Length: 271
Image (cartoon, rainbow, N blue to C red):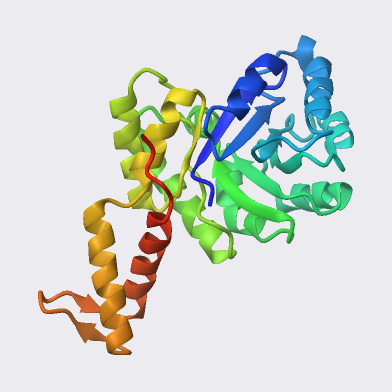
């Protein structure tokens, strides 16, 4: 189960090496926003070299936006490399884009980044476009710019839209978009708690110091685990709906939430 994704620029191989040992569940090598045009070819070549072997953690690559001058070369260079765990496709706006990439890459796990109003509107159609699509995410910086949003709460509707679309299409819960301030860990924790309440699972990071904060926010508390065990125990003893001694009502939906908490609880707590 992946809770933490660490972005790293593709044109800085020494930083990529450090990122692989930083404790993230997966590393995302970025060929798009983090790499200037003059270094696109170098970043692509360095990433392809990395992926000729199998890295110690899953490595995904965010290729350049489909339709850009670099996207086709990115897909050609990376497809078939043994160390590639997945491709993240930026600025997706239509299901046909997913189909074209899936046909070209032959079964590589794909993840669609929705970064515009049009992408969010078509979230469900994109989510069910092809079996190779494994997940959705928001690109919140671009989405803010597209919608003219300045207040944090203005993103809650598109966030919920993506969570619902992923669930409706049978995909895993999406991970939250990156938190841009690498110093304010208290604000990051609060933002993660809000994202968890909206239905996200895990988060992308842009610095290793963000990783333990994200894990702590998404792992259940001891109180949640205790309550989940009580619910699971009651459901085993009495099939169907049952009321606990303290008045809490247990039915299949409540049990499903408890089982998810218990699954998460088996993951070690970060330091």
